[in-house]
Length: 167
Image 1 (cartoon, rainbow, N blue to C red):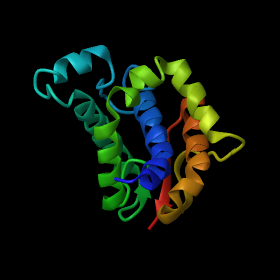
Image 2: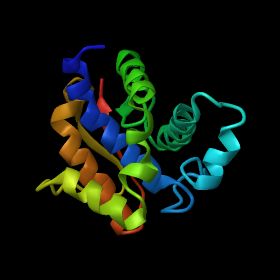
Image 3: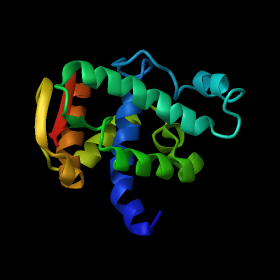
Image 4: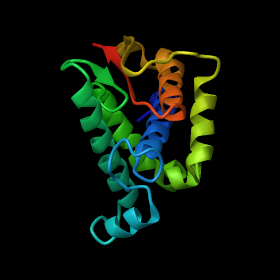
């Protein structure tokens, strides 16, 4: 895995981690998981002793993917369902990132994470409730600010939004 891929995908991964953390039960409760809680880590460590962080990541991503898939059309992409090659690259990035990519380390709590997501949105003011068209999945890096903006607005207004990308 080269530095070019790392640098291009790291922002995508960070937005994914922010949204997956904020969507969990203890924050905004979009999905009923608690993988990023201390108890979630304790539950996973005996089973995945060498890769508990990877297990947390895949568990919460799958929960988020299912919720998004329920609200979006088949064939669309979203932050939690990207083309297979990107998914594999993100997996390798998480696998190699160890503890510094843990939401507990990166964001600490709900408010810090929401502020970080708002920062990722920058000046973008994209919003909406339910499915929100963003652009093309091939240009995901160009659309990250809009994606972050949609999620930040949804979490802040206690609504659910599902930004999606065309293939």
